[in-house]
Image (cartoon, rainbow, N blue to C red; front, top):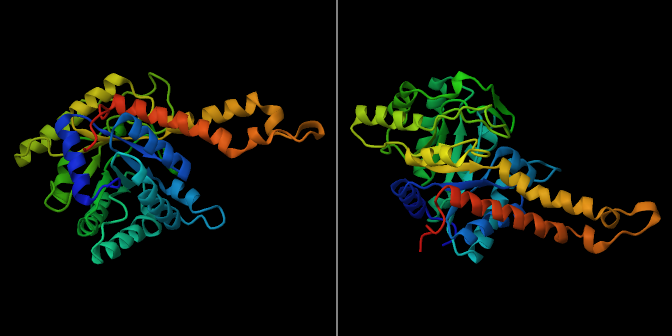
Length: 340
């Protein structure tokens, strides 16, 4: 069962929360980066989450048509086949989807899973993200209510981002300022609109200073202790301890202490993209520089087929990215926690 069933995915998240660890959620853009993520999880003996953003899905759909749904469905179907060769369990997730892309991405993918569930099958994806952080909170939560109902019926978990994450990802950008901190009132309004599980399970991407992309130390002030305040504020109102399952966005470049604090305060999923992109590309760049006269037909020569064969440098890229995924499992305490 390499791709989690809805029941197993729920179990994975429950185990993470109870054990104060989180799953690395690795963005992939190709069959090779998928294999790198799976390999990294397997070598860490950790279950995990594979995710595809709108931009990643468009890239996977091919540059001729750039169809996001085709790209996402194709990779998910591919994952269902190749993941069987890895002795771990993974969930498939779609990353950030803003309002203007819902009709071209998340809603059609929900329809795919609705059809599968109607036939007695499991959904194609185990969770989808709605990124309404660019909308007012009222509009954000209104759309989230509609999506949560559809997701619940299709046995899918919804991820919601209720306040901005700084930086830019797939065309959605926010300034780095004081708005990057979710308030207890924001969290209470979320619970009022979406419930605390009775209307369907959801993951909450709350903001505690997170920024997408690359940033230098000191440029971003993360406050992962804020997550404890959100859980306690909502928990006190509803009489439920630690009501939220949190997602850590903008995780690349975070310190081990910041990650540890986030884990103690309810984070069960941490997105990692920038660091794994670099890990994948770095050995390719080194190979090209070190084998310049082999990968190029310079001065009338014929080059060296063995050096420009994509399999040669592709293997280096896969191994490097897999190692970074394994490192992430260690940082998030998921190493050795796979479901037996």
